[in-house]
Image (tube, rainbow, N blue to C red; front, side, top):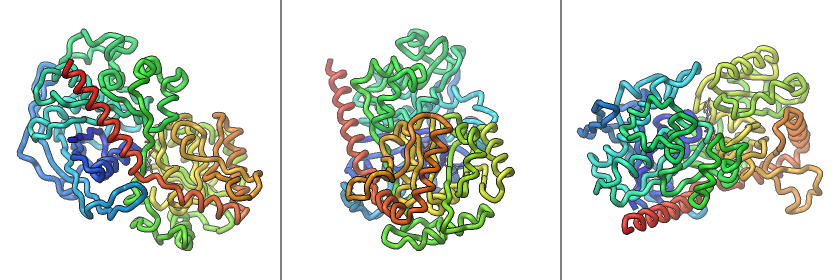
Length: 511
Ligand code: ADP
């Protein structure tokens, strides 16, 4: 099959969160399964032509938006894969597979400091930027001659692609065999805009209905993606069920329930080419499950960066996060005084909403000997934190999949998580009260259920206690480091779903 992965962010070119990791790794995993894959995204400021060896294809597109035609240039680069293969379930790869990735260059829209908005809020023209991008994806397919069987769309910024395929491009022979699959990475971001933006879509008011993209008087682009796609996925089994409930569905639970027969949960994999303590080039020392000595070097290096004093006896609990209500850090503020009485050091790296940035900066000022805080986005530091910390905290209100707990496993850094979404699916609670017989203490981390600061405090107390039990901790680290979340399995699930979508599309075309 010819598969095009459309995403608003893709590693290593641009990243604000896990979506970029996923859409950077998935194309490689799908190619390994023998499919013909390409990817497409906007050419932001971070997409440096020289650094990434991009080339202008010499091809331009002319995309209608409202009553104008806006031209964009198409660039081409590659997602490189160096892996030699052989991991669980993944057939060996040619050493240097190169997956083409196309970029839409439209500087008025994408050549900005941030991808979607500043810490003060979203860019006011996001509707225009991403309606344009969605239509540009289709126009780009034509000029580059990539006739996809599947366009795999990711999050609201690509939500108009399926809508256009079933409306303006429905009779276009180029897309006669093209099915759309839509992945919900986070239902909290829906692309909601006032109805005066309808003119940007060049679609009639007939789709501005509750059965179409209308949502309580507004345009809801994510809803469009869900309704008009052939197959829908969410990034974990639990999340695919949660979003069908009122509590987690953000108003779209009814729409999702209607499409439940076409809605699947596929857990994200992680890219062990990028996240592996045995090969990670960002670390002060490398280590493995068989020789953990390098982890202590990484801890010293990390605490040195944060100006804290390392000790083998004191665990480091870390968090790396977008700062948003979703991530659950309100819980910390309520019990910070009690937390800081416990014997651990806290390391934080994150950026996002000002309110939370301030909370963490205040913690740093108030507890300078116990807490190291950095506000910002720093990928190299994120790797150092994964390696140098002993535990990784994710108290999320909701978490579609979560990647950091999966990276943490590999780095022997034990996750402490709230049991929601993908965190619930991947973290097994370690219960020190069970007897230490084979199979009884199955856990790879610590979990709490109720969204409450009391529970958070108590799970952290528990984790710190277990840290002091050296045998127990080693047991936990072994279990965690042995987990395998490579893409092989999930990529197969996606390929099966691509086939399903393709069959659905063929069925529709012959009717
Ligand atoms: P989300 O996509 O909701 O932000 P995930 O856990 O799925 O959450 O993925 C977050 C990804 O972004 C991880 O790879 C994490 O390391 C990275 N990340 C988040 N914030 C930062 C930051 N400030 N600096 C570096 N990496 C970050």
